[in-house]
Amino acid sequence: MKGSVDQIVWLSDTVCACGDAIAVLKSSSSSALFDERHLDPITAGSHTLAPWGINNDLPQRVMGKIDAAEIVGTNATFNWKVAYGQGPKLVEVVRDPETNRPKVFKEVLDGEAYEWYMRNNVPLLLMEIMTDISYFGNSFPLLIAGKKMDDGTRNGISGIVHREAMFSRWGLDKKRRINSHLYSSKWDEYPTDDDIQKSYVIDEYNAVSDISRCLALGKDVRMCFPIYLPSPGRPYYSYPSWWSVFRSGWYDNLVSIPNLKKAILKYNLGVKHIIYISDEYFKEKEEQMGIPRDDFKKRRELHDEVVKQITDVLAGEENAGKAIVTKKHLMPNGNGMTMEKYIEIDTIKNDISGGEYLTDYETGANIISYAMDVHPSLIGATPGKNSNSLSGSNIREIFIMKQSLSKPMAYLALQWWPVVRQINGWDSNLEIVIQDSLFTTLDQSKSGEIKTENNLTQ
Image (cartoon, rainbow, N blue to C red; front, side, top):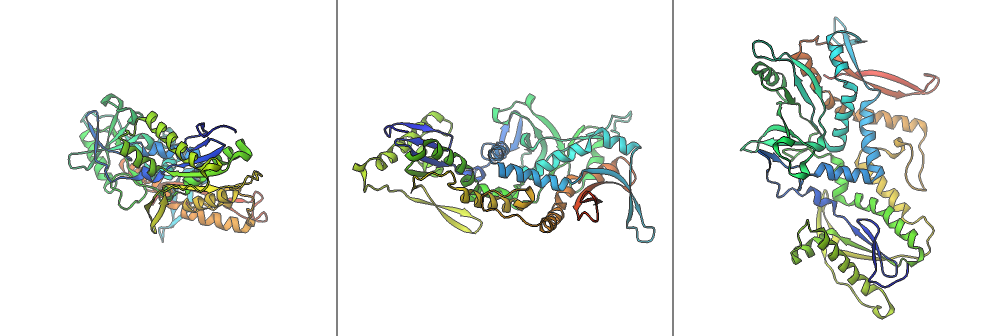
């Protein structure tokens, strides 16, 4: 691309080309998404709620990031698929009369419990619950109370439905304690009371007594059964441990590479420099100039002006020897502190071959897979041209280990079942089990796969 440094072409939200095809990469500071220092309760209609993220849109922002990186989305989906195995079955556990240990699992295909199981499509329900646990660390299924009786009580639990975590928030009382589940698809549009569905929140540590009391009062038709990953220091919403990839910067590095390569390949030999500009730098400039965060036009004008100033210094022989002065910013991480540069400039070679940054991409993909507890070989392919495949035996052993580590997610997804079973007065030997797939050698199974039914809910 030929032209003056006045020409700025934005290729995406994070990459632009300017001047003599100098590519500029603005790294987005994902860590700012998780800044919860000023998260006071907010109001929506007549409700007081705990915001999920600075702008009460953290699940939506995270979902957008998941959609933008194939590694992240595939890994998050893989995690719940492993926990889901071959899917659930309703069975009767036949126990040894001497030891009372499970001896045989008989599949249940009729009766009141089976009709309830089929009517509520439990296999699909578990997919939805596990997806939210894997992606967001929280899930919000609602138990539906039965019909109201002549004496004013309600008749057991008639059903269970899934409510998306993206649209779920915790309602708070005056003492900032959780007292309701609020569901709306309009959290980013200042919803009114008509846009919000309110449900009672069950005490998950005393669920049977709590639900029995609600049914006896005959009031609560919908009751939220909270499901969440343990998350120390988070009073309202759990954070999956793999969200560390946003704080550490590895996610930003990974997603910037495709855009950067697109710019390099599009403008070929014209690219001379890559300029990294931290969002913290722009945030500080915006505050100094009094530009509101929601004034996107002025913010973009500021970004263009900063880009132009830097490229003015870099472009042309008359500017040789000029320097750019900037500062560094200390960023906390799990190991202490790291130094983030506000502006960093790299000079790149112009011998474009199409393989630039593949090693960087492979490294980032492997680190993100490590954070998400997924061995890349289990997905079926490892990014990068230097990938090595493991033997079938090694992959099989790694997969078995992964299945074992996925048991907590299966347990969380089925927490509600023993409660429903007891409330509805069904046999305590009725269980929902999840079948695992165990891969073996062809001499033991023609398909190379055997199934188990050993995941009990208690």
